[in-house]
Length: 359
Image 1 (cartoon, rainbow, N blue to C red):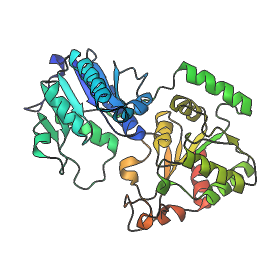
Image 2 (image 1 turned 45 degrees about the vertical axis):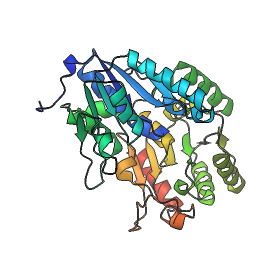
Image 3 (image 1 turned 90 degrees about the vertical axis):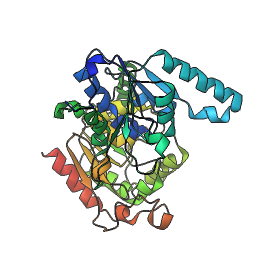
Image 4 (image 1 turned 180 degrees about the vertical axis):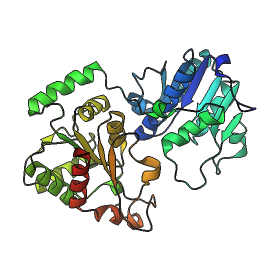
């Protein structure tokens, strides 16, 4: 036991905050599992952005999911203040003993002060102000070489207070739910697709610089279907993502099953769960497929697979040998196109697919 460790037996409620994007929130799910496994009596709550809540709802380790709605900022100062005060009152009523803050967001430091938990844990970010750091009782050092997966970085905050997660506890948890499973079963039936009878391809990302060229994606679909695979394509209901799918469709020589823009996040999880294989780029759908234990082929460019790669699932990562990657830039020179990603060959993806299928 660490000298300044936290005895969970003396803790009643925990608040875990992750105010980031969808994939980041899902990669925090093992934190809840580990807390609940080590102290089953705990009530563990989550605080996330409203649009990301589906990544955690249904998780059996979570008691309540509280949300910050980004739209509050557009409601006017009085309305926003009312919503914020209402949220703060709800959180205060929970009387938390421990706060675990999983980002640099200033809200976590304010909550550590306003909610008054006995213990507060955050990562020791180098660029945050002194008042932010002083808001927490425990700070966890960040990896110095930068090559540590985000799941482990999240779990490091638990290690800092004395918990040692077991290997089997670190899996991602995403729960589609019965309604989504029924909806997807109907959709797949309408498309003539059987469970495990198709490859799930999600070529889009909210960030254009993470996307593979439309022409290569279309060629991959044609070659997969020529080999007897059925391909089901998905994308978010976003104009840029749907435009990419339209360009892929125009370039593909063979028609493919398409549910682009038609799925909720929960339904997307069910689609992945029923697939024989997932192919995609560094994006939330890739992490959802990992949580569903569907084998993953992931294409990486400017982002780093050491931090964001498929987690605890059979997978193959494709990345170029460009010495400048991962750079994290918005395409080469900020031009939205990433050479390190566009140079990846269709044959490499097919080889990765075959490798996973024959394992």
